[in-house]
Image 1 (cartoon, one colour):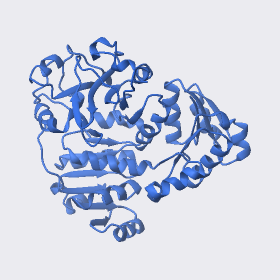
Image 2 (cartoon, rainbow, N blue to C red):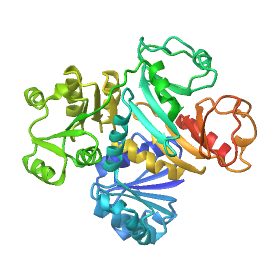
Image 3 (cartoon, rainbow, N blue to C red):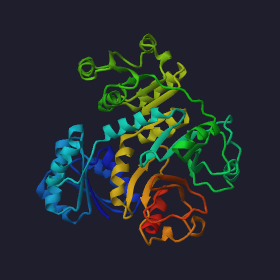
Image 4 (spheres, rainbow, N blue to C red):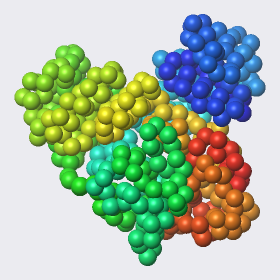
Length: 446
């Protein structure tokens, strides 16, 4: 595809990298020539110095020939205007980054569609949803639900106390008469492994598991995870994502939110009905102690500073908080945060990329999730009638080695996939894939 990215900020640069790695034809436009030079030196793409809200600049950049136009500048007004202009000039599909939740309401989506904007992305709202989801199931690093929670994917850190550590995947499958879950990937010492039956699990592996809702408890027992109920949550940072997290949680949990800026803290106290807002520096250990951090079940750090979020979560862990969540926007810090045991990592760039990425796939894809600790993606695809994926049992189809099929949703039923599973037309299939395997498996579903 020919993909035009308007804005070379963090999100735009990450998208450019991802699409270049997938061998798309990428054009990146920004007014800042220095930013473009840095990107141009690392990736095979075209960079254009120009104003993304200029009709002349967009026309000269041949925006009419692009299949996908993505506007991700710092300001939403420019993002919206840029998409409107690009659509009028001939861009096929347009995606705009926004920071106003009103725009995402169903009654307003048609309004933006008429203006020429096909999709609106609000990364802070998506990030807040992931934080809320991570608190639903303790003991997990990441959790994604597919088609009404019929299938669930967990990222779990396994230690020596886990029943499945030291066993091969074949041995784990043999533990049960009916297969309860699929281990679709292992992250070990920074390397992603797509495992087969002879591969074993080791202490400190980050394991990606796909299972049904009814088998979640069994997965937790086998992984050696103790379950507890989350009641008290402390949020550090009253940013847009911090506010959205508090709004999502305050009906079900006791929430304390710490914000260093006095004016913002006063404003949040007025806007949040069931959240106790405290004006103070969350890096101050005495303040955290005074506000009862030792009684907290979860600590969520979502300030605008990745280093502060990582250190604050480390502090919370030392104080005995069992569940920690950190927003880590600096991708270079993700491995560090993972290795020192931060519970759940949130990265708005990766979340936004997940939602935009599906527009580049030819197969019928309803969900794509880019994972924080690995380059791999989790996809939910629908098998088309007559497609190769429906032509026999999985073990005879010659699936790429960098792909693992975890489970299938057929009507109201969820099925854990085995080598003997036969996929039927219109089945929704949840699979784990490395970047090189996505294009290959896409053809099998089309």
